Image (cartoon, rainbow, N blue to C red; front, side, top):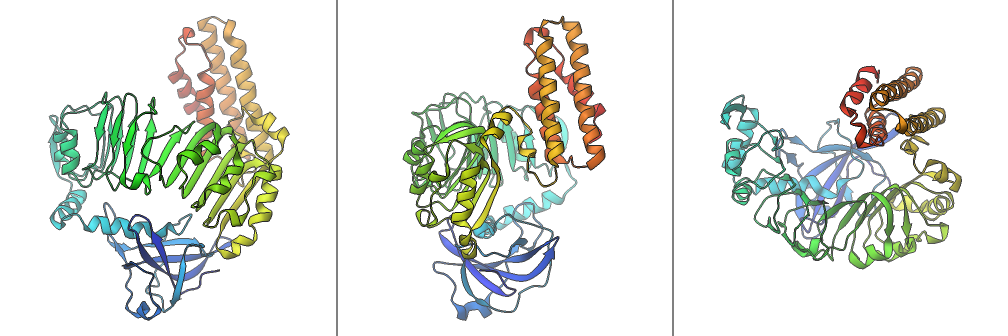
Length: 498
């Protein structure tokens, strides 16, 4: 179903456990595609809207956190997701355009965020907004700092007592590399502190149940018990994980998104987990994932590349609404589930996958697009491609729209030559090593300069790929050579034209 200007829809929001509403205000040509502008509406209900209520609808004004008060408008695909319920059509509530784009229709998330914001006492919200616009300075650890400061990293600004942070009323993000005094007390005091990264804390029991966190990145080394707050949306686990660790989360993690790297450990207490993301995968077993998290609504996976064992088990995730993989293999066309096996699926993305599986996935799900499925199957790979690209950090460039096949091949060749050159230098002296690696870095950088000069395709993500690949190459040099890698990266930075 395609959206039309004036259409009003409802969608169930899992955080609110209520329905939210939106309107398509107009359709516009953006580039070569027709896009719809979605307006969030100031309405929630236990049941979907009724058509007779359309005339009383009002737009939602968003002003939570750092947002200036305004309408919540975003460009979305004109294809209506399968989980959206059509209510009726009425005259658009605004004719405004927007600069904001979204991959999906967002399922009423910003409505939820605005309502949570409005639960904070008005005087605290007003003080936050005033401080955010203020140029006033406050004294922190003997130095003058802006009162409007939004984030702080203890590696750069060391402090011992978290209560000292009260001088920053707009602080919303905190990175800690040790456990400060009075952390719990401070977190319970500040309803705007939503994001924390906590490393090297040396705690075995952690209790965030009375905080206002939305995202928590946590070093799990030594942790035996972890209690989460009800509104936590995203939990990122790093460090050494103890599989006997007990985690307490609202509804066993039903509204939680768990982010992991390389592997999926067995986590106690998250049997109803709603979303799982895992990156850097070498191997993952869907049978194990199903056993641990049978009620997943969202499963997103990135390989290094890697393999999926028991892919056929995907058909048993009956609550699954969103599924995506990148650079993952080890399965065949026979393992692809049929649409009737995944009745709630509304987004199905697979990139860089076995060629036969890609063909079958497209065949099975092409007609589901008419019912609102967001389908994106790209970069089918032959077995020969995988053999050639297993250790190629530029494999994602192959098939990318803005990168020619020739440049993708040149990047892979340049990486292989640089890697081979570094490997041959192991028998060199330290002085010879530094000079010769400097020459390799120069050739590497100038190679990409030459490619980009002809096509101008290197932007932020490509630049990061080139830099990350170079860091990995320099890490191949044995530590005993005592090479100044920062100086080599400085050579790269000085020479690059992109």
